[in-house]
Amino acid sequence: MGEELAATSALDDIRLDPPALGDVQAIHEIYGDPRVWGHLPSGRHTNLETTAAKVSLWIDAWERDGRAAWIVRDATTGAVLGHVGCSVRRGAFWNLGYRLSIEAQGRGIATRVSMVAIRRAKQVDPNLPIVAYLLEHNHASARVAEKCGLTLQHRAPDAGNPDPNAIRLIYADRALSSEQLHAALA
Image 1 (cartoon, helix red, strand yellow):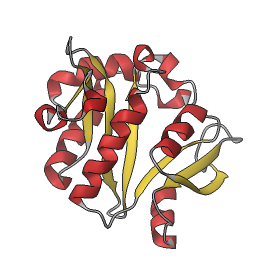
Image 2 (spheres, rainbow, N blue to C red; image 1 turned 90 degrees about the horizontal axis):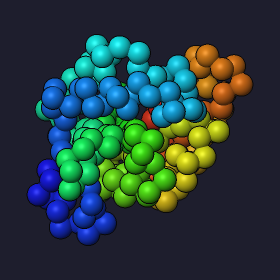
Image 3 (tube, rainbow, N blue to C red; image 1 turned 180 degrees about the vertical axis):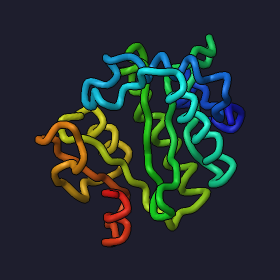
């Protein structure tokens, strides 16, 4: 993957690699950091097994769908900065997702790597919409979605969230059918 992205000048300082089990510890350090989960504290990983299962899911998704989460690395040092990718959800849409270390945040990395993920997902299956769902108070993720060309398609209470006041936003690259919206809300 790194070689196909090397020509992308916007990513000169970043390398995107398919996930491997050797990435579990570095991803766990990010997923276990409470500062990364300010918008959803209940999402924080508290054990390595949970992170290992997530990375395994990414590996399986690459094999099944041809695209999923990449590991985002500093191109110079190889240090893991986080992950980004579009994964097929419920056969109905590409789910754009990313998580970056605190040190990597605020540098425009999320927008740059998300644009690459969206472009690659559309190459694999352009018929599936790109969807990003986030909580309303996560303004940084909303800005990333908007910079990537996604528009707000839905706003409603976030069913099942431990915070009863949480509002879920769904952004997409096109209008969603009722089936696609239902799949995104499930």
